Image 1 (cartoon, each protein chain N blue to C red):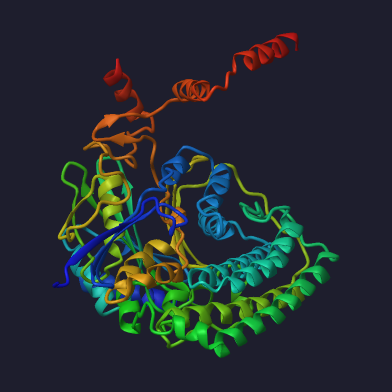
Image 2: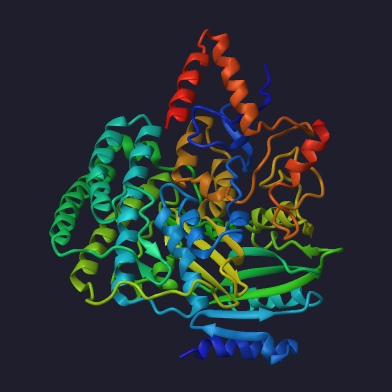
Length: 411
Length: 160
């Protein structure tokens, strides 16, 4: 029988995917001949919402663009606001911001190594890395009170200081993590199964990486020597020394080595920051109203370059906020990587850009529209629907509601 | 300090006869240029080909009242960003795609099409981004006169 072309839709809801997005693969046998991506399923209206809120409220909103690189987005955003307002953030504030940034990179990269292990059926690696990742999560919780969405930033500096008794705790966790990462590098370079499984998968040449606009570890693993921390320094990076890790494997294996190498650099950076941590205030007072102006800021998030643009109109609310998350830059790259590859490699190739679709889709979505007809449920309709659904299952809330009413009335 | 930035500014002013006040150096590594839509393409190509702005960081679309604004944030390897701004009238908001040179622009341009009602000439066929396929025509959420309950209200009349 002659080979036929098969079109396979993956998503928007699919067990392989951690977030909704849709991939349409064209297959010839087991080989992928073409792929298109449809995004937008995670759109939450954040850019529009920012225009209707104050700068401080926006900072918390923007921190929630992404669950993993929350500090990346909030820092990238307030850097623009601080620039427009002409605020000079105290050195200590910048160092603490940078410290959180590197701790965030550590937890994000360890998470990725685990996910990559899982996608190729190497779940031991997932268990190991995610166990170790708890060390950095504990440190982030120790400093900020939270494992993610740290709320460390504020316009003009940071909200929490680093105390002297926290420093040895952070350093001890970093020592352990460095030890563990050395082991993972050994696994990465010596373990044949891992190397063979990842080598040659999701190929992306240096020329294509540059042409398609790949960012972050995805670009660096194709030999593109770009890192905003060095090229357009912000925070305390201008005063710190670190290497930009690149690799010339141009495949998923290379992307693994880059992230492992970057972990080692992050440990080095954390130690430097704590050693050089300047004394002094951590924040300057910021005005409520930001003068008219505009600024653009770049930030090397764990997944690549974040770009934020803010236009201020002199009020306490921005005129325009624009967010470009790294996954949006890398998504076209994925389509290219998958072409001529095998269907079975799809999960690991997609995972290898460390995609974050909630970052990418952030601007607007208010209504569910189906064929032009509206079927949006408002709160009372949803409530009624819920009550009816449960009563069909034999669960009756009438008695409970009566009790609640009595309780409210007696109060 | 700012030697490189000033040099780029001079080159743009001299080559295209732009008014000097339209190009500003905000600080180290940040240049803003406001250029007319008529010779935007020429200036953009010159910046990318001759001035070394080989990275497209992103494209921002703006609702500026009577006009729609576009800012192309393009960067050099060394970190300098040139923010090229131009405006087109809102009743005929047509720009040309830059996706042939920067394929990543595809997503940024589609975003302006969906959210601001920009018309991008030369955009290759593909899925819309980011709004749903069933999104009503003529609703551009990032326009200033669009409120998040605009659709909710039309829904009420529809259901009544």
